[in-house]
Every structure is written in structure tokens, then in C-alpha cells.
Image (cartoon, rainbow, N blue to C red; front, side, top):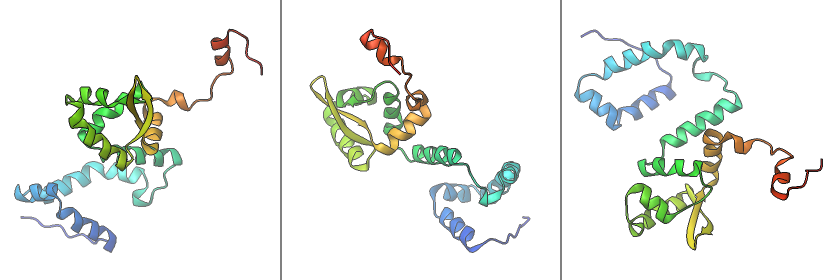
Amino acid sequence: MPRIELELSDKVYQRWRGFLRTEPAGRLREANLLGDWVALGFMAEVNRYLEQGGPHAKLTPEEERDLEAVMDRRSLSKPQRRVLPMFNENDNVTLNEIARLLGQEPQDCADMVAQWVSQGFLAPGPPREGQPAYVLGYKWRKHNLMANRPSLNAPRAPFLPALKTGKPAKD
């Protein structure tokens, strides 16, 4: 079998050793595909890597925020990923709505929601329809607004208050 030798920095070597302890690496080793997978992945991504300027490429602040949001979303559990889009339409959701979405009884969801509150994914919000309601935690509110409702970050138009009162807005 052909063999390739590479020179790595200590930092990259430590990351590689950490990767080798993961389940995906174990599955690739069991199938005798780890080396092929690394070589094919490298060849597939080398142009993108070089275009971005290698490992020390400077990202714009917007790209950094987007990357942070993507990485944070990847860390969410499957139920959290299902609940997150609920906040595209509503600023707060009730335990019953979360339970209905997940197909569970509210009593069964209560512990999970309490854990999400302690993790900062959700935060207690103002009660709605006599039931406790939840809002997204600060970090997730920021990510969700940027990704799904960018118009909420836009400055309000001066004529909007006039629509509510029926009087023209004053500048």
C-alpha cells in the first residue's frame, strides 16, 4: 500500500491526535478508509483553502459572526434545532407549543426546557395566555435575528408610529 509522509506543526498534530479518538475516525479506521478519506478531502478542498489564504486568513467581522453562528448551530441538539425556527414568527413560545412541535407531553418537555434555560438556549419570557413563555437566550436571539429575521435589525421607519395613531409622524 502506498504511504504518504507529511510534516505537521505541533498544534495540527495534536488536533489530529484528538480527531483520531473520535467516533468518525474510528469508523473510518474500521473500514480501512481513513487515509483515503484524508487524501480525497484534501484534494477536494485545496483550492478553497488556498483562495481563503490558508489557515491564517483574516475574516471580516461579518464572516466571523456568520462562522460563529454556524458553529453554534451545529452544537445544538436535534430538538433544539427543531424549536429554533419557532422564533422566526414569535418572540416567545410556551411550553405547550414546544411540546406540540416535538410531539411530547408538556410534562415530559418541562425538564428539557429547564435544562435549555440553564444552558442559555432559552430564557424565561413574559407569560402568554396565562402560561409561562420562553424567549431565546441572548446569544441565540442574536444569531436567529441575523440569520432569519434581518429586517428586525434594520432601523425603524419614521412613519411606522403614524400608522398606529393615525397622526403623521414628526421628524
